[in-house]
Image (cartoon, rainbow, N blue to C red):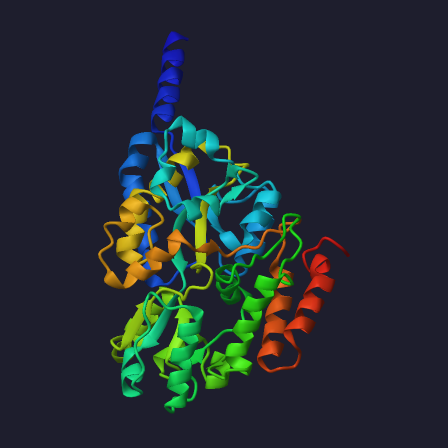
Length: 408
């Protein structure tokens, strides 16, 4: 009997000694470079910290409609332990109570949030609690074709442009014979920097829309006037292009407002045009503004392995982030890693983190997707003068509560 007990205890101890906690991390599938970077990060963790602490990370990307599949799995109890959360849908997930608040873990481990850009930390706070840590980010800047500006004898754009001086240079290009200086998208997220720069706001303190307020309306009017009044801009499709990056890469326009994702596209497909590019900060109105697009790593509130998940998350936004920056060319959310990023092209995009606003619109329900679609549709109509800005704002104010799910 004693011998059996000894064998039993030995087996139990052996199993305990080699027990491994599996942590599943998920996001949408990336391109081959991005997939290579995340697999390298996973392998690095598993062979170092994971080996020491008995944690194995598995990367399981979610194909298809990422948010829908994720929410279905989370509500069914089969969600990943850690997953991507786009700032655009963050509030919806926070209100759904599927994210783990990280404040206790940050305090316990003295985790240095001060090393992250404040705008990125605050982007993932809800009701003063932290529910995600930004893995990387992008901002908007002004891309322009230096060769076209030189050919038409127009001074290059600079980091110190105002909206008035920006418009003046576009008008000079047009007057000199370049038909469409600017490609502009009828997308609300591209209008937001104009609204903030003009001193406007997206919502009032009660979270009702503020687009009808004077400064917000003035910004929207200026955005539309670039197309309809001054006739210095068209949307990409009107230029025979699929998106802004393609429009400037094929020299259908001389200027766009785009992000660092355009770098890889142009380097890979239009290297000669890329050499002609200048990139400067967004023009200034009452103040500087740009758009911040960012994604966090968040932890499933229902995971039974919260401590292990936190260990993995910490790695992903420290050593893991360094791997992403070097391997995938993303912008680091940590200032210490950003300081090591020597790519001069990225500097203007990093600068935007200091004054940019995250791409999210707070609502009482956490829902904004339908409102965004409807506003984009109105922007398209505004581009083609099917209605006035006053009429568009009236439609928005009348239907806003329905669009955000506050009313049936």
